[in-house]
Length: 314
Image 1: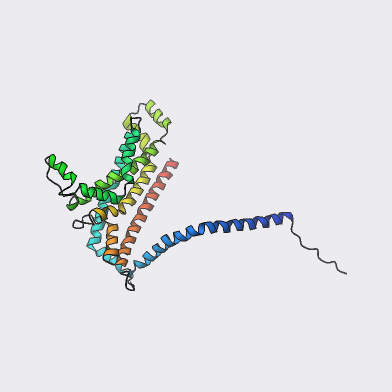
Image 2 (image 1 turned 90 degrees about the horizontal axis):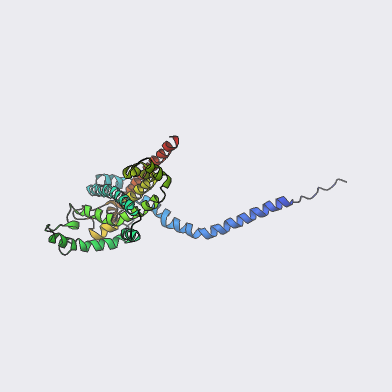
């Protein structure tokens, strides 16, 4: 009589591996249960609007009547729109003025405040406080101060014997005044970042340079600034992105005027989408801005990576 096959039994090691897999699956399920609300919120508030606005940029849509597919017509119209061209020029001028000035002023103030002086904490606080003030509050404040008829600025100029200025109502001054207001508030961020970076400058390098006879200028040029290069790249990218997206200060103070002299890209997008009710056209302008920001980020990333490679090889 043939013998029966012996029953298959699991060893203790197999049982342990199966129990471990079951426990890991249970932990994964628990983890997904906790993070799924956040994932759904991110998808609903970020991914879906991005995809929807991309599709919207290829349509003629007034947010009320049914949309109509127009392909690349919105982008072709942007290339021929003089108002969009003016908004691009205003934004580039604003960026070219604000970004380097904010970084330079921030570095100078950080170097001045990176010393053991009396009440240095108070000075640092006074410089940083404008950064935490909202752009809306800044706009309201400076609208009163720079009012051509009743503002405090023209009152001071009158006592100094200087003729009254138009400030935000003068097409030749309005954009420069906005740059000055933003410098008043945005430089504090650069100061704080530079102060934090200056604490990481190796003291050994500074002491060695001093022993070699290096003065303050040589210390700054050959020791401090090379150490601050990564921070400068970060601030260059951050400040550029912030300046290209400026909106609320323009909305509160000038509404894009006078004569379109302060109409920037984001304000142009808002105007087209929610004032002229050409949402598709505004979405196309928004994606032109997004593409510009992406190009800037990629270029700075490539340049930074090349600098790192050259530093390693040297």
